[in-house]
Length: 240
Ligand code: SF4
Image (cartoon, rainbow, N blue to C red; front, side):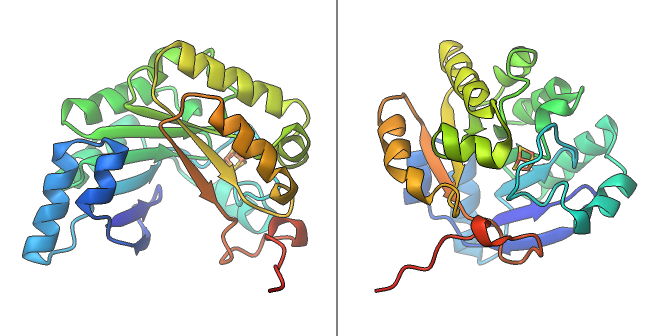
């Protein structure tokens, strides 16, 4: 089961059971698989994989994202970030409930000064640790990134589409981040949002993905539940 928790411990949503066969592809190890088998056998809902939001703040302003959209800005300004101790307590609580795989998200997770301490704690408990980053702080935070089992860098299509969504110059920065992660032999996943901006860049994306050593790719679409989705952020309707 996937579980998404925000900073205030709210359970936002849960979806889709992942079965061991699929998990082998992700090389997440026997700890996760054991929890999923246990969930299936006992028919209990176990939060084996958790998406944990480390911060609501970000150093980018992507057009498709909820982080700095008007409707959300008040929330952001009011939001109290969890302290290091609260994060560690939360990880302990999750572990006790069967969590063996955490994807540390944001906002931008590399903005957390205590990232190394938090991931070390999770790893020491035997939790498979992933993080997703926009790549801007990869040079500064490479020592923290080396502690993760897997690092995901976001890149949205080609230079034109990526920079239209994420800001001028961000494509080159994402490429630099990808090269840095690979040069440090950290397993890499790429994340791309499929939208009206990227739909014409799909061929370029496929060529690009083929040429680099990837662990996996995770395409995504802007959430239809948010009020922020502008026309161009949605995938165009395809007439059959
Ligand atoms: S980098 Fe990620 S969290 Fe930050 S604004 Fe872009 S999509 Fe949102």
